[in-house]
Image (cartoon, rainbow, N blue to C red):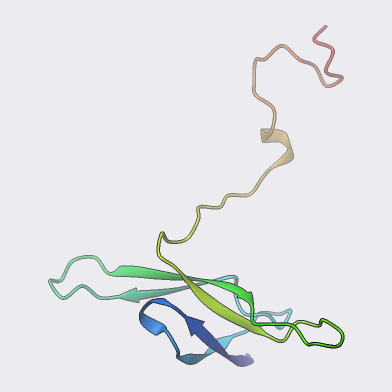
Length: 100
C-alpha cells in the first residue's frame, strides 16, 4: 500500500508529519484515531483527528493535499442511512403519502 506524509494540527501530535496509509482512491482516511495508553493501566484515551484540505493553489484553486485537525470532542457517531428506515412505522401513511 502507498503512504503519504500528512501533517497534524493541534492535540498531542501538533506539528508532526506522519506517514498515513492511503486507500484505494489515493486519499487518507477521513478520521485518524490515536490511542494513548493510560499510565494507571486503565482504558486508553483515544485522540481523534479529522481530515481537512491542506490548502489550495493560487491560480487554479486546486487542492494541495490533506492535513489532520485535532477534534477534542472525539469522533462523531456514524451509521448508514438506509432508505427503508427513514419512515416511522405506524404513522398511518402509505407509499403515496395520502394516508388512505
